[in-house]
Length: 67
Image 1 (cartoon, rainbow, N blue to C red):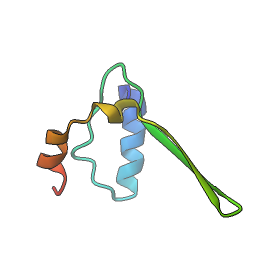
Image 2 (cartoon, one colour):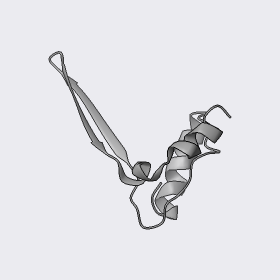
Image 3 (tube, one colour):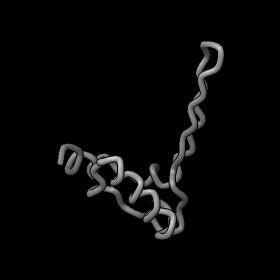
Image 4 (cartoon, rainbow, N blue to C red):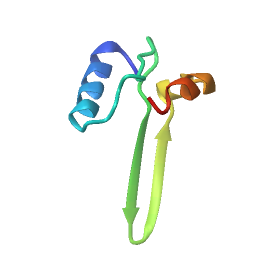
């Protein structure tokens, strides 16, 4: 996630929804990723900005995914 102030708020919101955040990391100087999904008249559109998500490496997921 992005800077500490933004990351803290995002992590807190995830925890309120009982989403595990143990593997969530902050990446200094990189904004958080975001996605917007719209569904209008039967068509959907997804806008995705990777941000700090693009910093995740496969070996980080493999070791923490199911814990």
